[in-house]
Length: 440
Image (tube, rainbow, N blue to C red; front, side):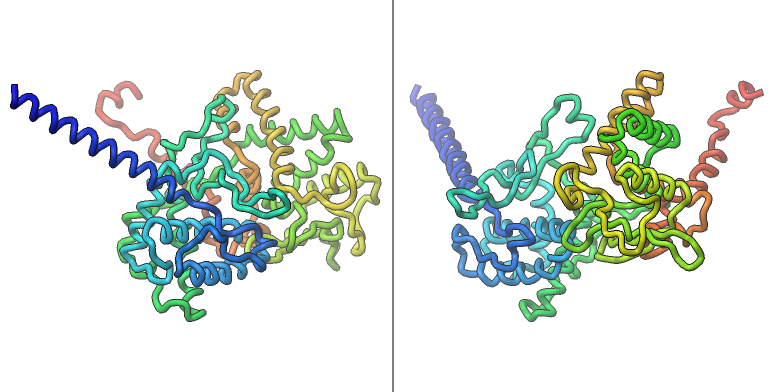
């Protein structure tokens, strides 16, 4: 009896201890809940360290990181991706390690990458939200913001599924981006005399974080049937409703024919697409000038088909057939008011509507697999599709320059002739001799 009593007391003590530790963990997690550090690109220059950050060493870290991010305030997408990686590192270093990012060593970086692969659930959100919000006339940190965001595919979203923080995962591409951004960050810190070492360069066995790839990377693009259906849908929409869908047809044509990124069609801090960006050279050939990734300007050869699309778009807008050198009309004007479209989301929504209508058509006509594949497509697939289709019939160097690739190696990713030949040669491989009889 006494023995059982002792055993029960021991179990009770163990349960109380476990419960106490669990409560401490909850309290700790609540205390370690991250708050945003860096606001928008426009506000970055005047931004000060939020008062919620109490660590003595945080001021130097903050100023170093802010100086680094200011280097990219001319490119919104680059700034956003760099801000995301730097902010995550600061949050982890301050809240989890209680140390300055200027004191981080190789072992710390390895621990950090493992942390990013499996962050606490309290650090994961299910939607992208603003880091800072306006409240009572003040700019304050948004308590709903999280450094990591769980996402699901477009197809899953359409099926009514929601992101699950317990199923968060970090892709290999994201790990590569961590290495790239943080390596640039520490190189900057060395140049500015904040620190003397780049801990990323000390990691010798990077292969344990991402695989080496053999052969070509699979390019995400539309099949011939998918693209033919999508552009036919765009034509039909424009013919049936000029006011709403002439814009749709021109956007689809430009994204595919000139391999444009969605950011190259909208107005931003470094680029305002205008009609005069289409221009004719001394030989009578038409070109389109744009400013793209890395703030690089390039000239794109304009096909006769694209020129025809431009004429149709300008006719709808009440303009002359082709632009003059001083035609500063926005390439894609807003629906209401003056000026150019400045929202990439608006372009994405227009393209998505076309995709959705094409999915319906493919399903209704028995092309189920093509419809399923198209459900996953994004705007950027149109650029990939245009490049892939052209590299089959144009010199690789010409496609490379129109696409703005820094190297032909990048363009080579879009050449899938070798893959077709390789598969054709493998198609009749036999496993056993009985197959030979069946073949005969």
